[in-house]
Image (cartoon, one colour):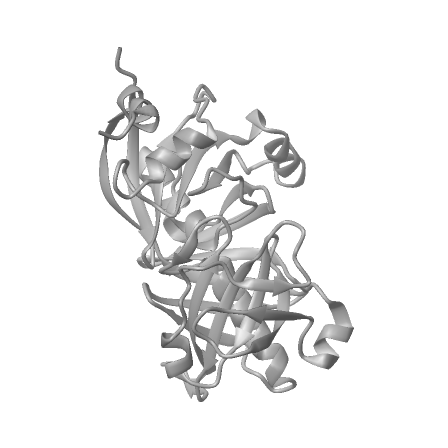
Length: 312
Protein backbone atom coordinates (compact mmCIF):
# COMPACT_ATOMS: atom_id res chain seq x y z
CA UNK A 1 0.00 0.00 0.00
CA UNK A 2 1.49 3.32 -1.07
CA UNK A 3 1.54 6.49 1.01
CA UNK A 4 2.30 9.42 -1.24
CA UNK A 5 3.90 12.45 0.42
CA UNK A 6 4.04 15.73 -1.49
CA UNK A 7 7.33 17.57 -1.09
CA UNK A 8 9.37 20.45 -2.45
CA UNK A 9 13.13 20.82 -2.55
CA UNK A 10 14.75 24.19 -1.88
CA UNK A 11 17.97 25.81 -0.78
CA UNK A 12 19.46 29.02 0.57
CA UNK A 13 23.04 29.45 -0.66
CA UNK A 14 23.04 25.68 -1.26
CA UNK A 15 22.04 24.81 2.31
CA UNK A 16 19.29 22.47 1.08
CA UNK A 17 16.06 21.19 2.54
CA UNK A 18 13.18 18.82 1.94
CA UNK A 19 9.97 20.80 2.55
CA UNK A 20 6.57 19.33 3.38
CA UNK A 21 3.27 21.12 3.97
CA UNK A 22 1.19 19.89 6.89
CA UNK A 23 -1.45 22.60 7.42
CA UNK A 24 -3.74 20.22 9.36
CA UNK A 25 -0.94 18.73 11.52
CA UNK A 26 -1.62 15.21 10.26
CA UNK A 27 1.92 14.03 9.45
CA UNK A 28 3.71 11.86 11.98
CA UNK A 29 7.23 11.76 10.53
CA UNK A 30 9.65 9.79 12.71
CA UNK A 31 13.39 10.48 12.98
CA UNK A 32 13.90 7.45 10.71
CA UNK A 33 11.58 9.03 8.14
CA UNK A 34 13.55 12.27 8.27
CA UNK A 35 16.85 10.42 7.84
CA UNK A 36 15.43 8.52 4.88
CA UNK A 37 13.93 11.57 3.18
CA UNK A 38 17.16 13.57 3.53
CA UNK A 39 19.40 10.68 2.46
CA UNK A 40 21.29 11.73 -0.68
CA UNK A 41 21.36 8.24 -2.19
CA UNK A 42 18.16 6.46 -1.12
CA UNK A 43 15.96 9.50 -0.52
CA UNK A 44 15.45 13.03 -1.81
CA UNK A 45 18.53 14.48 -0.16
CA UNK A 46 19.00 17.52 2.03
CA UNK A 47 20.74 19.05 5.03
CA UNK A 48 17.43 18.95 6.86
CA UNK A 49 13.66 18.66 6.66
CA UNK A 50 11.23 21.54 7.19
CA UNK A 51 7.56 20.95 7.95
CA UNK A 52 4.96 23.72 7.59
CA UNK A 53 2.54 23.37 10.50
CA UNK A 54 0.16 25.82 12.24
CA UNK A 55 1.81 27.43 15.25
CA UNK A 56 -1.27 26.50 17.28
CA UNK A 57 -0.42 22.79 16.83
CA UNK A 58 2.81 22.78 18.89
CA UNK A 59 3.68 24.01 22.39
CA UNK A 60 6.57 26.07 21.00
CA UNK A 61 4.24 27.50 18.38
CA UNK A 62 1.66 28.48 20.96
CA UNK A 63 4.42 30.26 22.88
CA UNK A 64 5.31 32.10 19.67
CA UNK A 65 1.65 33.11 19.22
CA UNK A 66 1.61 34.53 22.74
CA UNK A 67 4.45 36.87 21.69
CA UNK A 68 3.21 37.52 18.15
CA UNK A 69 -0.44 36.62 17.39
CA UNK A 70 0.31 37.05 13.66
CA UNK A 71 2.86 34.19 13.69
CA UNK A 72 0.35 31.79 12.11
CA UNK A 73 2.88 29.30 10.70
CA UNK A 74 5.60 27.38 12.52
CA UNK A 75 8.87 26.12 11.03
CA UNK A 76 9.23 22.58 12.38
CA UNK A 77 12.87 21.93 11.48
CA UNK A 78 14.78 18.63 11.74
CA UNK A 79 18.45 18.03 11.07
CA UNK A 80 19.38 15.31 8.57
CA UNK A 81 20.05 12.89 11.45
CA UNK A 82 16.42 13.27 12.57
CA UNK A 83 17.19 15.43 15.59
CA UNK A 84 15.21 18.58 16.37
CA UNK A 85 16.95 21.92 15.76
CA UNK A 86 16.00 25.25 17.31
CA UNK A 87 16.58 27.45 14.30
CA UNK A 88 18.06 27.67 10.80
CA UNK A 89 18.70 31.05 9.18
CA UNK A 90 18.84 29.71 5.63
CA UNK A 91 15.91 27.42 6.37
CA UNK A 92 13.58 30.18 7.54
CA UNK A 93 14.11 32.06 4.26
CA UNK A 94 13.34 28.93 2.24
CA UNK A 95 10.37 28.25 4.54
CA UNK A 96 8.89 31.65 3.67
CA UNK A 97 9.54 31.09 -0.04
CA UNK A 98 7.67 27.78 0.33
CA UNK A 99 4.75 29.53 2.06
CA UNK A 100 4.58 31.91 -0.92
CA UNK A 101 4.56 28.94 -3.29
CA UNK A 102 1.69 27.36 -1.32
CA UNK A 103 -0.28 30.61 -1.36
CA UNK A 104 -0.07 30.88 2.43
CA UNK A 105 1.94 34.12 2.53
CA UNK A 106 2.23 37.40 0.65
CA UNK A 107 5.31 39.55 1.18
CA UNK A 108 4.32 42.25 -1.31
CA UNK A 109 4.95 45.94 -0.54
CA UNK A 110 7.80 45.20 1.84
CA UNK A 111 5.57 43.78 4.56
CA UNK A 112 7.19 41.53 7.16
CA UNK A 113 5.90 38.05 7.91
CA UNK A 114 6.10 36.62 11.44
CA UNK A 115 7.23 32.97 11.65
CA UNK A 116 7.24 30.76 14.74
CA UNK A 117 10.43 28.82 15.45
CA UNK A 118 11.83 26.97 18.45
CA UNK A 119 14.18 29.92 18.96
CA UNK A 120 11.29 32.40 19.04
CA UNK A 121 9.49 34.53 16.47
CA UNK A 122 11.38 35.55 13.34
CA UNK A 123 10.18 38.28 10.97
CA UNK A 124 11.00 38.00 7.27
CA UNK A 125 10.67 40.56 4.47
CA UNK A 126 11.61 40.58 0.80
CA UNK A 127 14.35 42.71 -0.75
CA UNK A 128 13.85 42.01 -4.45
CA UNK A 129 14.86 38.36 -4.88
CA UNK A 130 16.48 38.27 -1.43
CA UNK A 131 14.88 37.57 1.94
CA UNK A 132 15.93 39.46 5.07
CA UNK A 133 15.33 37.80 8.44
CA UNK A 134 15.38 39.58 11.78
CA UNK A 135 17.18 36.83 13.66
CA UNK A 136 16.39 37.94 17.20
CA UNK A 137 18.73 38.48 20.12
CA UNK A 138 22.19 37.01 20.26
CA UNK A 139 24.72 36.74 23.06
CA UNK A 140 28.26 35.65 23.72
CA UNK A 141 27.83 32.43 25.65
CA UNK A 142 30.84 33.20 27.84
CA UNK A 143 29.72 36.76 28.57
CA UNK A 144 32.05 39.67 29.30
CA UNK A 145 34.91 37.40 30.38
CA UNK A 146 34.93 35.65 26.99
CA UNK A 147 34.85 39.04 25.28
CA UNK A 148 37.81 40.24 27.35
CA UNK A 149 39.79 37.05 26.75
CA UNK A 150 38.76 36.73 23.11
CA UNK A 151 37.81 33.07 23.57
CA UNK A 152 35.97 30.64 25.83
CA UNK A 153 36.49 27.31 24.08
CA UNK A 154 39.15 25.22 22.36
CA UNK A 155 38.67 23.22 19.15
CA UNK A 156 40.71 20.39 17.65
CA UNK A 157 40.03 19.82 13.94
CA UNK A 158 41.27 17.22 11.48
CA UNK A 159 43.54 18.92 8.95
CA UNK A 160 44.47 21.77 11.30
CA UNK A 161 47.60 21.71 13.44
CA UNK A 162 47.15 21.88 17.18
CA UNK A 163 44.24 23.14 19.22
CA UNK A 164 42.71 26.51 18.33
CA UNK A 165 40.84 28.86 20.64
CA UNK A 166 37.26 29.81 19.77
CA UNK A 167 34.43 32.11 20.78
CA UNK A 168 30.97 30.73 21.56
CA UNK A 169 27.92 32.58 20.22
CA UNK A 170 24.30 31.81 21.08
CA UNK A 171 21.96 32.52 18.16
CA UNK A 172 19.06 30.62 19.68
CA UNK A 173 21.17 27.61 18.70
CA UNK A 174 24.82 27.06 19.72
CA UNK A 175 27.86 28.12 17.69
CA UNK A 176 31.62 27.95 18.21
CA UNK A 177 33.68 30.25 15.97
CA UNK A 178 37.35 29.63 15.17
CA UNK A 179 39.46 32.31 13.44
CA UNK A 180 42.06 31.17 10.90
CA UNK A 181 44.90 33.16 9.43
CA UNK A 182 44.84 32.07 5.79
CA UNK A 183 42.66 30.65 3.04
CA UNK A 184 45.07 27.71 2.87
CA UNK A 185 44.21 26.75 6.45
CA UNK A 186 40.51 27.03 5.68
CA UNK A 187 40.79 24.99 2.49
CA UNK A 188 42.85 22.30 4.23
CA UNK A 189 40.22 21.45 6.87
CA UNK A 190 38.77 17.94 6.89
CA UNK A 191 35.22 18.45 8.14
CA UNK A 192 34.16 14.87 7.50
CA UNK A 193 35.08 14.33 11.14
CA UNK A 194 33.26 16.03 14.02
CA UNK A 195 35.44 18.78 15.54
CA UNK A 196 36.40 18.20 19.17
CA UNK A 197 35.19 21.14 21.28
CA UNK A 198 36.22 21.71 24.90
CA UNK A 199 34.48 22.25 27.19
CA UNK A 200 32.02 19.88 25.55
CA UNK A 201 28.76 21.78 24.83
CA UNK A 202 25.85 20.01 26.55
CA UNK A 203 23.63 20.08 23.44
CA UNK A 204 26.42 19.96 20.86
CA UNK A 205 27.41 22.91 18.72
CA UNK A 206 27.86 24.15 15.17
CA UNK A 207 31.51 24.98 14.47
CA UNK A 208 32.40 27.83 12.10
CA UNK A 209 35.88 28.47 10.71
CA UNK A 210 36.44 32.01 9.46
CA UNK A 211 39.08 33.98 7.59
CA UNK A 212 38.47 37.74 7.93
CA UNK A 213 39.24 39.89 4.90
CA UNK A 214 40.15 43.57 4.55
CA UNK A 215 37.25 45.97 5.00
CA UNK A 216 35.62 47.33 1.87
CA UNK A 217 32.57 49.41 0.90
CA UNK A 218 29.21 48.51 -0.59
CA UNK A 219 27.53 50.45 -3.41
CA UNK A 220 26.16 53.03 -0.96
CA UNK A 221 29.50 53.77 0.67
CA UNK A 222 28.85 51.73 3.82
CA UNK A 223 31.91 50.06 5.29
CA UNK A 224 31.51 46.28 5.24
CA UNK A 225 33.58 43.46 6.65
CA UNK A 226 34.04 40.50 4.30
CA UNK A 227 34.51 37.07 5.90
CA UNK A 228 35.08 33.66 4.34
CA UNK A 229 33.57 30.71 6.23
CA UNK A 230 33.19 26.95 6.33
CA UNK A 231 30.95 25.17 8.84
CA UNK A 232 30.42 21.79 10.45
CA UNK A 233 26.74 21.67 11.42
CA UNK A 234 25.57 19.76 14.46
CA UNK A 235 23.67 16.64 13.39
CA UNK A 236 24.54 17.09 9.70
CA UNK A 237 28.27 17.47 8.98
CA UNK A 238 29.79 20.04 6.67
CA UNK A 239 27.17 22.03 4.77
CA UNK A 240 27.50 24.52 1.94
CA UNK A 241 26.09 27.28 4.13
CA UNK A 242 24.63 27.99 7.57
CA UNK A 243 22.59 31.13 8.18
CA UNK A 244 22.81 31.28 11.96
CA UNK A 245 26.47 30.29 11.57
CA UNK A 246 27.11 33.23 9.24
CA UNK A 247 25.61 35.54 11.86
CA UNK A 248 27.73 33.95 14.59
CA UNK A 249 30.85 34.27 12.42
CA UNK A 250 30.27 37.97 11.74
CA UNK A 251 29.48 38.68 15.39
CA UNK A 252 32.60 36.87 16.60
CA UNK A 253 34.88 38.66 14.12
CA UNK A 254 33.32 42.00 15.10
CA UNK A 255 33.92 41.17 18.77
CA UNK A 256 37.56 40.38 18.04
CA UNK A 257 37.92 43.59 16.00
CA UNK A 258 36.62 45.72 18.86
CA UNK A 259 35.37 49.31 18.73
CA UNK A 260 34.94 50.68 15.22
CA UNK A 261 34.18 47.31 13.62
CA UNK A 262 31.68 47.45 10.74
CA UNK A 263 28.03 46.78 11.48
CA UNK A 264 27.50 45.18 8.04
CA UNK A 265 29.27 42.00 6.94
CA UNK A 266 29.31 39.88 3.81
CA UNK A 267 29.93 36.22 4.62
CA UNK A 268 31.17 34.07 1.75
CA UNK A 269 30.36 30.38 2.12
CA UNK A 270 30.89 27.55 -0.38
CA UNK A 271 27.28 27.97 -1.54
CA UNK A 272 27.30 31.73 -2.10
CA UNK A 273 27.11 34.95 -0.08
CA UNK A 274 24.84 36.26 2.68
CA UNK A 275 24.67 39.66 4.36
CA UNK A 276 24.71 40.11 8.11
CA UNK A 277 23.69 43.42 9.73
CA UNK A 278 24.03 44.20 13.42
CA UNK A 279 20.93 45.93 14.75
CA UNK A 280 20.27 47.84 17.99
CA UNK A 281 19.45 46.01 21.22
CA UNK A 282 21.78 43.05 20.59
CA UNK A 283 19.87 41.89 17.52
CA UNK A 284 21.04 40.84 14.07
CA UNK A 285 19.61 40.53 10.55
CA UNK A 286 20.48 37.94 7.91
CA UNK A 287 19.74 38.44 4.20
CA UNK A 288 20.21 36.09 1.28
CA UNK A 289 18.48 34.13 -1.48
CA UNK A 290 15.87 31.39 -1.18
CA UNK A 291 15.16 29.09 -4.13
CA UNK A 292 12.69 26.27 -4.77
CA UNK A 293 14.06 23.86 -7.37
CA UNK A 294 11.69 20.87 -7.43
CA UNK A 295 8.21 19.65 -6.48
CA UNK A 296 7.03 16.07 -6.43
CA UNK A 297 5.79 13.06 -4.48
CA UNK A 298 7.63 10.35 -2.62
CA UNK A 299 6.30 6.91 -1.68
CA UNK A 300 6.79 6.74 2.08
CA UNK A 301 6.04 3.01 2.21
CA UNK A 302 8.82 2.26 -0.28
CA UNK A 303 11.14 4.69 1.50
CA UNK A 304 10.52 3.01 4.84
CA UNK A 305 10.94 -0.42 3.29
CA UNK A 306 14.35 0.62 2.04
CA UNK A 307 15.40 1.33 5.63
CA UNK A 308 14.83 -2.26 6.68
CA UNK A 309 15.94 -4.15 3.57
CA UNK A 310 18.91 -6.44 3.97
CA UNK A 311 21.92 -6.02 1.64
CA UNK A 312 22.30 -8.64 -1.08
